[in-house]
Length: 87
Image 1: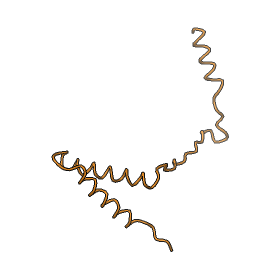
Image 2: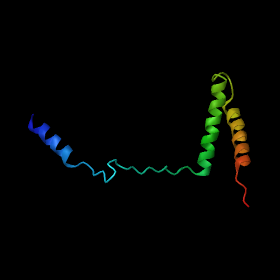
Image 3: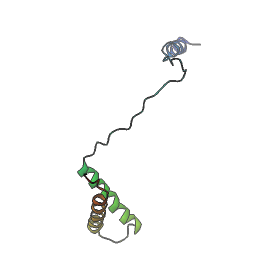
Image 4: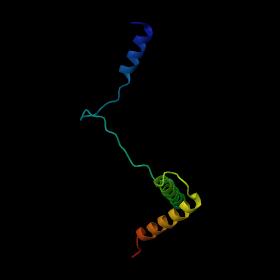
């Protein structure tokens, strides 16, 4: 084995994390918080809905502005309907 191979193998063996009593390495995973503001999230939802409208008609003749306006109305209606009430 070459010197480089021996050194790499030794380095790999030397710094292995301890696994504690259970033997398995524990990973803590947390969901990343949504960084989009409510206005940014709303705009993204409208954009996706408008895209799907165009996709559903095969991107054939149509008006992107009309797709946007219809998507905006749908998203706003859904947001108002699902808004939690304050008691």
